[in-house]
Image (cartoon, rainbow, N blue to C red):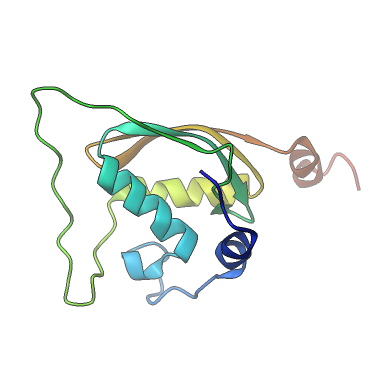
Length: 140
């Protein structure tokens, strides 16, 4: 998946304030980059995303990013979120937890993000070692 440098800049710089006091309650609280990820997971229902960079807590797809769909045979797709007239919908806890995890990682890489029934299920990430060292206070 190629990402145009202009699109990358937009995804990285676009950061909107949450509508409500609680972050990640509805799709309206998400940035463009986060909405992209939610749409991919919803559309594919079952599968995983590999090699997804995270910058400043935001998912930033690039040429290394792979979207792998898993076809469940003999099973129905999960429920589609109920959307209001604006297309906004309430986020499931797993989606909110995913973006909280991205903020904890801040700058790193999603090696593998599994999703089931159109919801994030499990995520494997790495963070830059220098970010961890700075946060730990071992080096000033």
